[in-house]
Image 1 (cartoon, rainbow, N blue to C red):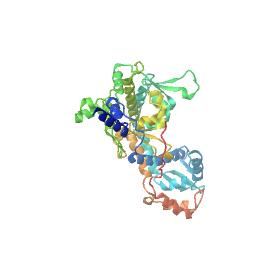
Image 2 (cartoon, rainbow, N blue to C red):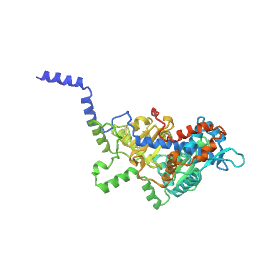
Image 3 (tube, rainbow, N blue to C red):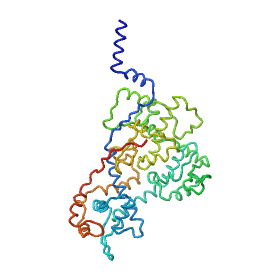
Image 4 (spheres, one colour):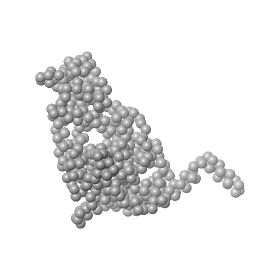
Length: 437
């Protein structure tokens, strides 16, 4: 009888070789198993399809605003866009026709050439964004202070890395003067002694609080966004304190398959304690398995806090890589983010699959930011101006002017094709791509 049971047990293991091992592994481990297959979320991908057009429009807008008259001849704009912005032939003309609410093509009164400038509506949106950026400057100062506090224990980040992410952090272009040097009680600009002449050797350093009142504010700065959400969740719903003390808001994308053991592993991982991203762990013994698991969860909290500091709760992986060493993020971002698809989402849409954008899932619902700010609303208006089809716009004068065939634009015979192409405002990027390591 015992021999029969032994043979039956052995045959079960041969049919299911990972069943017993998987059950024992998930019953003891507090780490989420690696799930390298990414599940698409079309809500976030659609946001990036609009963002792709916004980036194109912003690049042309910057080129126009760099001129004293805020306008350029079409031939000159087309040549510059093909040379510096990677536009293909005829793409600039197509883009201008598709988005008449942003760009206006007109005949120069003296030169009798086609010129391009922003529409009054686009200029008004630009002024609104500038006003929002100025009004939210105190919030930007606070975000920069929290970002420096994440860089424990040095509490400093390279100036060039902050400059690259200034748009996402809501910082003005002259933030070195208007934010860093204008607040000596909060920031200090440090130049490395190794390469004093190298502009990349400049660092922005956090300045400790000078008095007790500011000490209270500094303690409040070290409170993570997820901790405030846990407290609010506990006060509103009265959830179990033991379950929500170290838990994250998890919302898996549609179609994400969750097995029994995966669900158990997530439940155990949610209850695992971890050190705060603002806590200095340089003096801790991190050699044990439990310490490594806590550090892994601390990296999740660090990424969560970094995305929470941005204006739109998203950041490209290329810009995240700039802060990786300073704030202690893992080297293999691909595996790290795919392991926590319920908290983060990577979209590869936009820029022909070459751009990878990381979203904080809990901050969005149906492609919209749950708690929008003034700067986000001002920037969103540009996307709204790019969405309407040209058949709702008055393009008679533009088509008549463009039909003359001047300055590299196609002839009137091709204007009908341009109009039909302009009416198509759908997604045009279905390129799949691999993640960055």
